[in-house]
Image 1 (cartoon, rainbow, N blue to C red):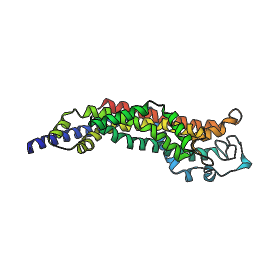
Image 2 (image 1 turned 135 degrees about the vertical axis):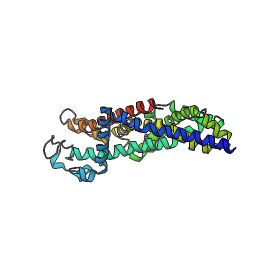
Image 3 (image 1 turned 120 degrees about the horizontal axis):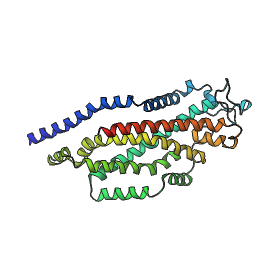
Image 4 (image 1 turned 120 degrees about the vertical axis):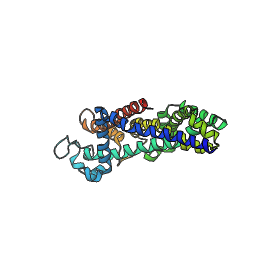
Length: 299
C-alpha cells in the first residue's frame, strides 16, 4: 500500500513539474507576439485609469455625473480633449469613469459565472450518475435560449438597474463554463494518475479539487479572458436599451445611447465611448486568442 501511494505521489509530482517547466516557455512565446503585447498594454492602462479615475480624470466631478450646462456640446479642444456631452460634462472624464462600471461589471459577470459553472462542470464530468445527468440537462435547457434575450427578459421582469443587469447576465452565462469544464473533466478522469488515486481510495471531492481542478484551469482562464469583451458589450447593450446603468452614472453603452440623437452633428458624444469599448473588447479578444494558442499548443 505504501509503495502504491509513493508511486501515485511521484506521478502527480512529475505532472506538476512538467507544467512548471512550460510556464517560462509560454511566457517567451507570448512576448514574441506584438499584437498580444500591445493589447495587454492597452488593457493594463485602461484598468489603471479606471482604478485611479479620481486622480486621472481631468474633471472628476463631471465624470461622476455633475452637470456643466454652460459648456454643453463643445467639440474637442484644449479645455476638453474629447469634447463635452449634452449636459456639458467632459467626455474624457466620463469615459474614464464609465470604464470603471463597464470593466467591473464584466469582471463580476465572468467571475460569478465561473464560480457557479466550474464546480458544477467538475461534478458532472467526474460523476456520471444521476446528479451529473441532471446538471447536463439543466445546462442544455439554459443553452437552448439566446443569452442576450434571456438577460433582457430577466431585466424587464425584475427591474432596471446596474445590479439587476449583472445578475440578469450571470444567469444565462454560467452554463457555458459548466459545459467547458464537464468536457475537460471527462477527459482527465481517464488519466492514469486519476485511476491511481481511485485505487488508493481517495474520495471524489478530494480527487476533483486536488487533481482535476488544477488541470481544467487553463481553458477556464482563457475562456474568462475571451468572455470579458462580450460581457462589456452585453452590459453596454442593456444600458443602451435603458435596462442597465442609470443616469447620472454611466457605462460606455449608456454614453453611446446619450449621444445617439446627435450622432451626425456632435459625433464625439457617441464615437468616443463607442471607440473605447471597441478598443478594449478587441484587446481582450486578441490577448485571449494569443493566450489560447500558446497554452493550447503546450497542453
